[in-house]
Length: 128
Image (tube, rainbow, N blue to C red):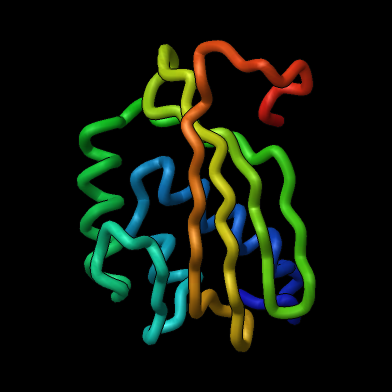
C-alpha cells in the first residue's frame, strides 16, 4: 500500500496503530513496516521482532484496549499520531505520541512517547 494507491502515510500510520491495538500485531507489521524496521523504545531491543513480541504480550494481557486517535500530522516522510490509549474501560490511560519515518510508503522507523493521565490535573485545558 502506498500513496500511489490512494492511501496517505498518515492513514498508514493510523491503521498500523489501530491494528496493533486490536491485537493484529503481525498483520500490521507485515502490511505496513519495512523489513529493516527499527524503533527507539528504551524498554525493548531495537528490532521489529522484539517489539512485536512485547506488543503481542500486551494485547493478550489487555484484550479490551481502547485506542483513540486525537490528531495525526504528516510532513514529507514523517507522521506523528497523538492518541489516548487505555488498557481497559476503567483505565484513565495515557497520552501517547508515535512518530513514524517512512521510506517508499513503508514504516522504517518509530519513536513513541507516553505520559500517564493523572486522576486530577491542575491544568484546566486537559491533556487533549
